[in-house]
Amino acid sequence: MESIINAQVPEFKVSAFHNGEFKTISNEDIKGKWALFFFYPADFTFVCPTELVDLAEKHEELKAMGVEVFSVSCDTHFVHKAWHDASDSIKKIKYAMLADPIGTLAKGFGVYIEDAGVAYRGTFLVNPEGLVKIAEIQDNSIGRNAEELVRKVQAAQFVASHEGEVCPAKWKQGAETLKPSIDLVGKI
Image 1 (tube, one colour):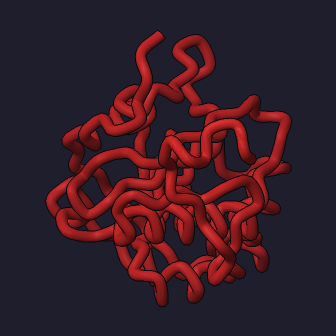
Image 2 (cartoon, helix red, strand yellow):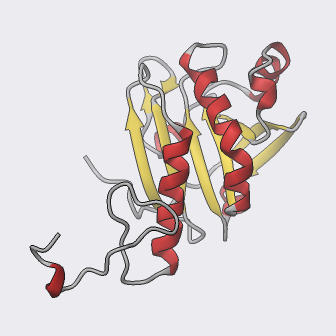
């Protein structure tokens, strides 16, 4: 099994539903930006809308941090629009919903379930250089927490701009960080 951490984001060009419109989004659109890819199994399901709404509630905070948010499923952009039109919960989403009907993105990020044609719940943060800095994959029966995701993004951005510092467990913005050195060995 190969790690995706610090791997280059795969090249892609997909259709999306965003703010009432169909758009095309590619890896070129995220160059020089922080980007969050939030894979989920399928539209019109059960756990997925709870996660997508949770993420929608943190969208403005993530935007303020300079993070582009993309939800991704193996549905088409037409299905994303139909779900948006049918669900009061999904109408709250202001980020782009990427369509990956042949699983190109899901395969590129290593979350595609071949025999089911859907993705695992995968969360990936890509830095402005196009490198994956956070990767989390879990079984489809387990929902994620957007508040914890925001904390991880803050930590990733902090260490990216503070060379030589690392964020300990449960680190929150403004809390003390660590500076690894021989003097810290065995003292934490």
